[in-house]
View (tube, rainbow, N blue to C red):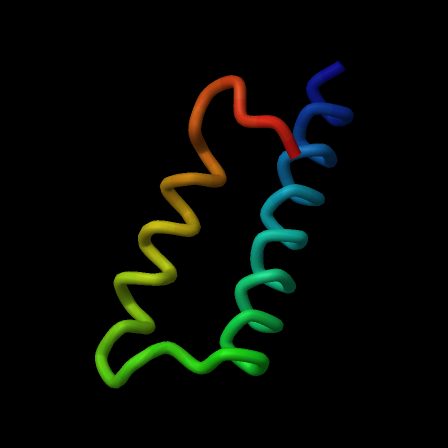
Length: 52
């Protein structure tokens, strides 16, 4: 139902946040590149048919 879909979407977004945070810790982006990295990650996370 709707609650299940919302829970799945929240889980995907949380996973994206954790992956992004770990990526920034392991390989820090260049100066000023954090905003671009976040925008690209969010955009990629919302692509239709994206496999997780």
